[in-house]
Length: 83
Image 1 (cartoon, rainbow, N blue to C red):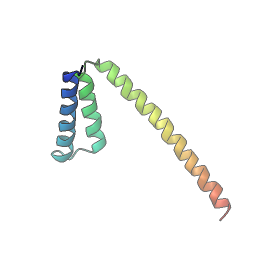
Image 2: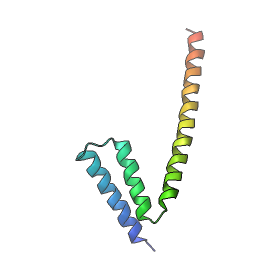
Image 3: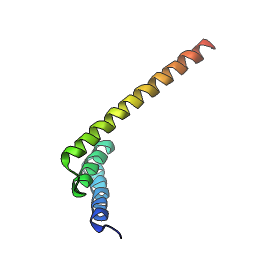
Image 4: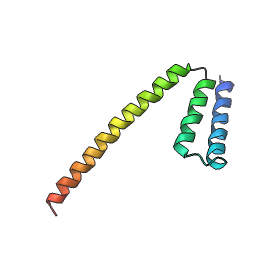
C-alpha cells in the first residue's frame, strides 16, 4: 500500500527545491538541505532526531573528505618523486 502523505511530502520537497533555487537563487546544497529537513518534519520525524542525523552525516562526510584529501596529497607526493 502506498503512503500518499509521504509521497505528497516528497512532491512538496521537489517543488520547494526548484522554487528556492530558481526564484530565490539559493545555493543548491542549502536548498536541498532545507527541503530535506521539511520532508523529515512532514514525515513525522522528531526535529531533534533530524538535527542529530544531519550532524552525524556532516561529521562522517568531513572525515571522508579529509581522508580523500590526504590520499590525494600522498598520491601527488609519490608521483612527484618520479617526475
